[in-house]
Each structure stands twice: as structure tokens, then as C-alpha cells.
Length: 37
Image (tube, rainbow, N blue to C red; front, side, top):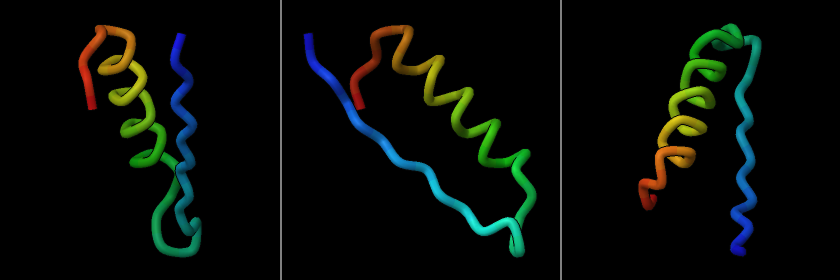
């Protein structure tokens, strides 16, 4: 198989973790559904 390494960083001083968590959840769903980036 193929491995995709991703990093997600954000500054808690600027935003809370909720937007990053939502983005990560959508990305996980997108990849799990077999869509290509």
C-alpha cells in the first residue's frame, strides 16, 4: 500500500482547536471514502 504522511499545525493563540478538529475529521472522511487529493 501507499502511506501518506500529513502534518497539521495551528496556533492556539489565534484559533481554538475546533476548526482544526473539524478539518481533520473531514480529511479523514475524504480519504476513507477513497477520494484522491
